[in-house]
Amino acid sequence: MKIGWSTDFILVHGGNAALAELRRVDQANARWVVIERLNGYRYVFSRDEFFERLRLTRVPYRPESTATLAEVLDLHETQASTNVSDSAQLAPPNLSWRLNETAPSVRRYVELAPSGVQILAVGGADISSPRKTRSMPPAFSAAEADESKHLANGGGRREVPRMRGRPSSDGEPSSGAPPQPTVPAEDEGTTPIRFPSIEPEAGVRSGAPITLRVDLLREESPNTVGGLSLAAQPADWQSIELSVTLQSAMIDFDSTGLLTIRRNDSTLSARIKGRVHAGLADGTEIDVKARFF
Image 1 (cartoon, rainbow, N blue to C red):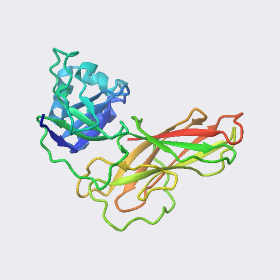
Image 2: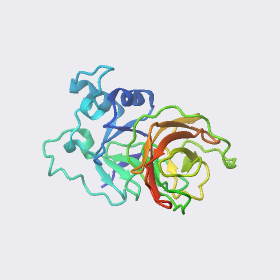
Image 3: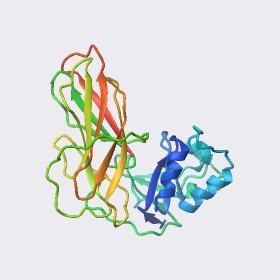
């Protein structure tokens, strides 16, 4: 089965407030729109199909509404596109459980990285945009990525973080970052690759306040595994803003953040404050996940 593939897409999240996600799609120049829901369902629509569906659903929407994008677009599981991990070995979409579904998304594909998180490309018989080649296999995408970081309470050992990914919520502006390690001189081009980093600004102590600095570095950090590949950007892009939220079973965070990737330059990092739970023994490893989009 021969189909076309494209990396010219924008990823939005069905569980987020509709107004914010609609603005992102409206401002983007991407030809394809991928809508993701937390249960792993993904939907591929062309830009025109996306706005046509918005018109046809006839769902009342007001700026003050709390309706999610999935609710406004009336998305259902039977309309989901097929997730694949190997575009070279495609099987036809399984339509046996959605016999009467006519949404164009059901006959399209979403190719995922081996981690099952990052979206590499969208595919379909009607998708013909050329696929862009990357210089290295990325671990996850900027639109939705997690870094899992183990912090040692009381100064114990720190493990190498593992990378995962899932959707995120909007964040708030953050302060600027101090100078980062020397960056390569070559131009990042239209598909920049960055390496996440989460570091505490001071020691991690039971029951104490904590501030974590979240960066996206141009060079791999000793405490980071994998890379973060952004979707294709305009040729003249200069900066990209990403929201970031932190989650941990052992830290209560009271803020979110916004970091800015600058072309061929260091990132303006996010600083996120929280408080470590009381009663943790020294050396306890604290798992912290950072979500970007």
